[in-house]
Image (tube, rainbow, N blue to C red; front, side, top):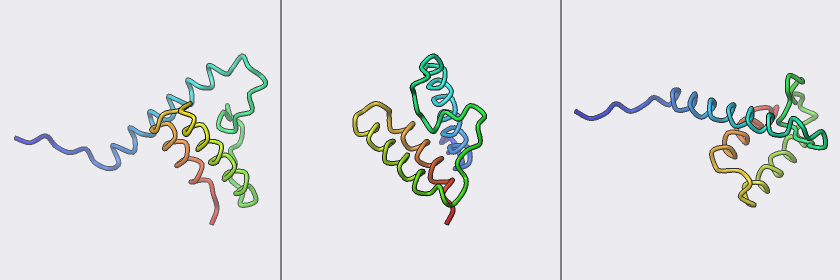
Length: 91
């Protein structure tokens, strides 16, 4: 008998879970470095949600692309963070 396929929502939950774990790991690693200016490391600070910040979000996506191109982060992390950032853009 063939194995059941996982649903799209389950795959999305798994991607989100891996993304949150990676972000948590990154925050822990940077915790001792106050010079790090990472907009994704909010640590309870209000996230960017206003339409006026769309240009700031796009700049963060560009920075994320540069990190991916430089092979600093893997594709799964890149994709999860990009999806998260783009979800905050108000149309």
